[in-house]
Image 1 (tube, helix red, strand yellow):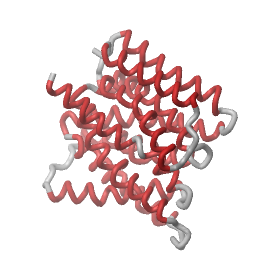
Image 2 (cartoon, one colour):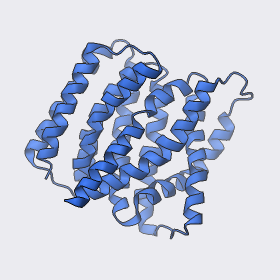
Image 3 (cartoon, rainbow, N blue to C red):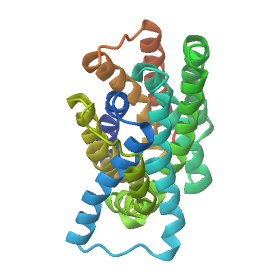
Length: 287
């Protein structure tokens, strides 16, 4: 019981940190190219993660760990940041945040495929209902405005769910912060050259908000959030703790309205609250 509670606490901290990711990305892509932003945030986080690995003398992953690390890097380090940055050129962060309500269902699906977890049927019922609210909102409220932005967000959710499930599975043996740190190191040979190639000739046009957004997604979204998130998933179960992601849209919408002064409609709030209700039911029947 204590381990499960600790998993929920760590997971909630991770979700709270991730909630600021899309608003921060929205601010950053106003002045940074999405590809540069994706590769720069990963390269910056890698410097910190690698320093911790060397300072604390962590053992290297085994050859058998490399496929899982590659999938975790593909989802969390490359795929989700890049696809959301591309999406946020077409839609507001408030609109994109609602799509995060699909992430728990996607993560649970990969928890079954890759993590060997077997939630009860009623868990899937609540997960599907929560996802249906989100998909319904996207279909009725925003698809016509930017189909391209919505497709980017849906693709981001799929690769992120895979990365979360794979990283959490590996965190059971390797450790949470070690998984994200080694994933970043594995992606660095790709990310750093692209960051240098796409780096703007001058940063004179980059304002303070964009720099702050880059700092947040590099240190918090790309590293610190994963430390708590992977640990929580490994302790409490990928499918179970993964349902906390249904709270992320609610937190993110508040940040979008407070910091970016974006309009949060009653439809967005109702969809998000419905998803929050579903997390309670999913949690009850997760095992």
